[in-house]
Image 1 (cartoon, rainbow, N blue to C red):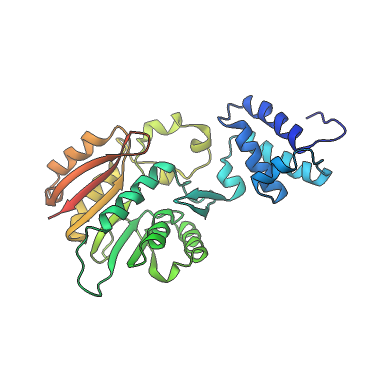
Image 2: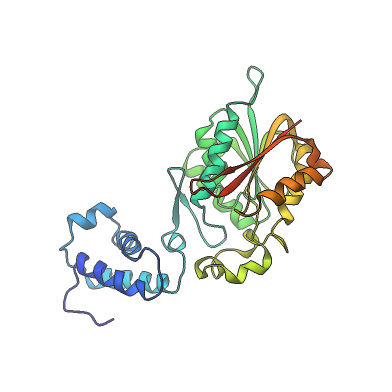
Amino acid sequence: MTSPQKWTIKSILDWTADYLKKFNIEWPHLEGEILLSYALGVKRIELYIQHERVLTDPELAKYKALILRRSKHEPIAYIVGTQPFMSLELEVNPSVLIPRPETEKLVECVLDLAAEVSLSPGQKLKIADLCTGSGAIAVSLAKYLPQAEITATDIADAALTLARRNAEKFNVADRITFLQDDLLNTQLTTYNILVSNPPYIPIAELPKLMPDVRDFEPVSALDGGPDGLKFIHILIEKSPALIKPGGYLVMEIGFDQKEKVLELCRTAVAGRNFKETKVVPDQFGKDRVFVGKVI
């Protein structure tokens, strides 16, 4: 870019908004603020307080490098290394899916259901989080359910390493057991609640995703097979054997998969073990969270 003699915080943010618009970045000014506060090591509010502050050459160079990465659609969460989720600032990197606001609804459903689980005196609430990724679900549940013991599984060692760091960051690592495991392996015991945000994007839809997702996030966390239901089907078939009577399967699904998922429950052999099934909309009004109560 052609620089004037001096760049203030205000002028560089104005320039950034115009620049990122050219690359179809949805929130160019906001993302400029996030990246500039990250580059300067200050809170966003301080940018407004110091809007006439002149950037040093090293600060400007660092910021320009971040903007260049974002212009290539690298997700901002990967650039700054964190993503807010359930009021927690989680560490993320390209080995894991970036936690979405929609998945917060999944956690909220589990928090509500936890209050309905009948436990004997002194008994711990047992929860399994399958496909844990960054640990967003497991760590949030451990943080907000101090009575819970949680098992978090993932096939990727890099994801489990990151999830452990997030658990340690929020002082819940002592209540989460991490296992490098595939879906519903026999190492698992039985649980009051089994929760998962499995891959559910049909493979033919992957090339159509936004470049931020398609080109940067792990395909293994997105690819749900030909119809997007590969892992959802496995969960419906196998999870009842791992859920205590009266317990729940809670999983995230695609916004257009409600009827197919409910039909799987009606036709799958193990799916008939669900006494009650429903799909809860997310905060955007889209069908998002499947809840099945086990007989």
